[in-house]
Length: 500
Image 1 (tube, rainbow, N blue to C red):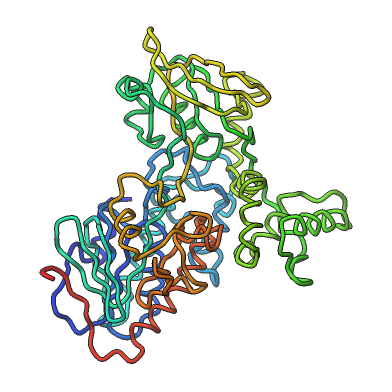
Image 2: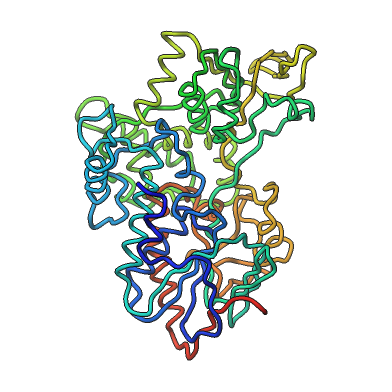
């Protein structure tokens, strides 16, 4: 699909406007969360409104997840669960069918489009196409502008929100949404400067240019064992690497292939929700034991629990949330964030049949350059007390997302928001604090009237807040709230840019 197909549908790029009477909603971040919020606003706004997405990437709707052009980087679930419209569950399936006929795309592992695991780039095309459709069909006076810039700071009061950009200009809005997406994590290990200079350490596992430069032979250390690690292996294999891989993670938990199973019965809706992880575990075990038709698939149990995750997290005492993070977080993550079957099969074949993939539990301590130019990885293996050194030819950072905002590096907006007190760290240091309606809570403990958040910034408040399903639910609810706020009792718009 052509890269410029969105702009041909009427999207205004980098038009900031001055002194208009039309209300303005600014969305900081143009990845999936910000773009779907814009789609819902465009679809539901009936009065004049300007929506501004501030995103330095040239393309909206992709973010980190859907920018990868690797065809082997696929959606973790089948197409039938990824419609942007709950009332039209086959919407994405129909898109895939049309896309396949027009552009020749096909999932070789699936006989039909409903169960196809689309590449993430294709899903990004779907999101961008729906944004173009929403722009073209918006009510009179409702428009979208893509401000190609990097937001650096935000000031919000009871009257308006001022967003300062990297070039020194500003944007003034009635409401603003923090849709910053995920930040790339870094391993908590010592990495010698010489390792960085060697070109053998890949900090960005999605940098295909760097992936392609690694030697075709040799041993690659994968720091982490989740879906990011899977992406790295699939990229390396596609670009001709024929060596071996060693994945190291603290718990040693591997990926599960996703199975197409139905949720078990709504056992949590039958009585008061549990308030501790232990009571939830007991209820889950009882449900499995009482299932009448043989041994149930545990993945169906996970799907039955998933709709309640947000409320379970919010109702749990802080000490119980901390206990969950310490003991059960990795188990839950690997249970809900499963791999596409064809992707998981690659690792399983490498582990059991061909012997080129190994996964071990251990704590990585340091990476250092050896005299022959290779990397020495110092590890304490599970059950051991002393450090062992593993020699590898390259290492890839596969630690996934960083949700602790105080540890995010290289993002001026995050630093400035925390320093100024516009936001405060979320519960247990995850994301930022917000109320049940996603209104940001500042350093003074007060709820912001004009600043909300969606997606990963709400990790500490809602826990599961980054998948397509959760982001879609949040975008639908948030768009309704925002439209009510900007039009309720407002006498004049403040949408403007520059010169403040």
